[in-house]
Amino acid sequence: MLYESKANKKRLSIALVMAAVALAVAVFYVGFLVGNVKGAKSLVPEGESRVVNVGFVPDFLSDDIDFAGFWEVWDLVKDVYVDQPVSEQQMYYGALEGLLGSLGDPYSVFFDPELTEEFTQELNGTFSGIGAEVGMRDDFIVVISPLAGSPAEESGLMPDDKILAIDGVDTFGMTLNEAVFMIRGEVGTDVTLTITRDGFSEAFDVAIKRAEIAVDSVTWEIRDDGIAVINIRMFNEDTTDLFQSAVQEILTSDVNGIVVDLRNNPGGLLSEAINVAGFWIDGNTVVIERLGGEDHSLAAAGNARLAGIDTAVLVNGGSASASEILAGAIQDYSAGVIIGEQTFGKGSVQEFYELPDGSAVKITVAEWLTPNGTSINEVGITPDMEVLYTEEDYEAGNTPQLDAAIDYLTSH
Image (tube, rainbow, N blue to C red; front, top):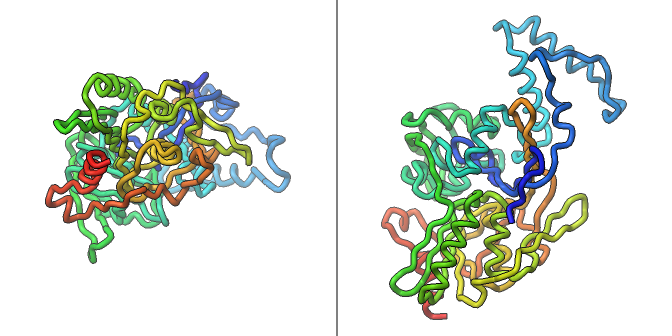
């Protein structure tokens, strides 16, 4: 079941992502959608674009907040800033961006109308950019995962790469949104990222040509040895339907085992992850949402059609958010073996509010836990079988993690 919004508010399990903003660079703060907008219209002035100082302090502000200072700075910018005229609309959006930025949470952000549209397009599986989810970690802009078949992957970007500069501009102190704006651009143009990577003594440049990114969220094949390999690249609105098609072919074929490849999957719609988990987990809790100290269980539907078929799930440092939810549920119920490397560790929940002028706010509202009550935030999921994928493997075209999964399934 897809958790659709009743109005304009959407529940996100990020990504995104962070995650980060998927947008043109697949900075994927995506997740699950549900709920109502509360008071959104009151946040955006109606009529003319000019912002008016209404001269009162709302009841919900604490007594020690003097909002007059805000308007004093507003007027100073309009009166004395060197490059006049200034755009009140941009000042207003900048104030909202700063408001979310004050939380110190890279997953709580403001989107202007252009970014909101691109974010919505990515949820539908189509966007333009380099095709890499980026996020913040230890004050660095980092690559969470390059999408399969994207310009980012083809250029050699890898999970955990730190982006030190974008087209020669130092990213130190740069916000995630600022980095996104610089990385994205017109299809066919180039962007150069200066990268530092574990195991390398010096930073190096990676030039990437931007492209239109179309993501088939689920692809699959049944190998000659009877092993079905299902690759889930993102959890988009079409994931459940595509996965059902894969399951139908698996159940009508002579399949000896299943590999679910979640490597470099930055997450997506939680409802889709819950739906997919339901094919192994018969009506039980898939994820626990913790809000305000209270735990709420989200369960899969019944009809676990893949239960009893040997399953191996591949993960790595680019497996985040909704993909960690699926892997965590399969691990907790011993419905399959997890193979690969420690996952990203995105264990928070965001809600996405679309505002009347086309802008939007995404804000962290909760933490999620695995069915056993384990928090993976900033920790990730530890695989049952650790198998590394090295730079040497990449250059040689080796597939040690997939090989380990096939070996497990054929000998199990």
